Length: 201
Image (tube, rainbow, N blue to C red; front, side, top):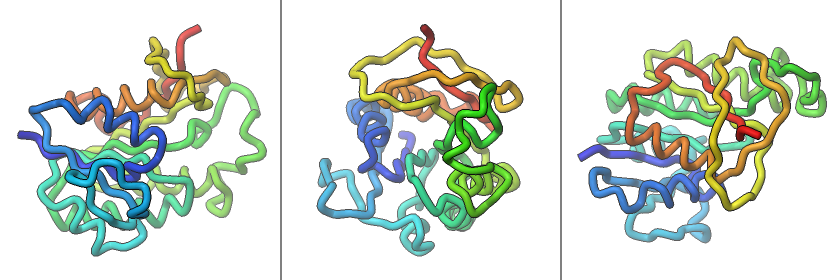
């Protein structure tokens, strides 16, 4: 039985990820969220804050795969705690979500989110977190969705790597949740890679 831990489970993408995993009888699914008022599956939920190292050590104990839909800030600080917690528990596999623009885009459409090279900006904090994760000894996949929609559909995806600047497009949160759930089930995909995912036109 594979133990999957979902951090940030109260987020919209986290909820979709849960929906695609909840009936998989080959998994033990644990949901981690900060706010007890947002619990939607009492049996599977533990309360924990990614900014609290002890909470993350408790949350990731016995995990085989950790999925993060945490955000939006401070991502670098959360990444540091999760690396320490997973190292403490000898857990290797992490699936992380980040902003598309941390590695640049084909068009300058992220100017309002800041320069990825400046750690004080939104994108810079996201990029710093990604760098910390890739510099760790974890087996990391950093998923970078394009602009998110609330469309109730699982779309066919275009997948680009981090060395290919990606043009502006859209993807439903439901599609992102489906992609993350598939990675949890088949967790040997995209190890130490950062796929950018966009709905095909």
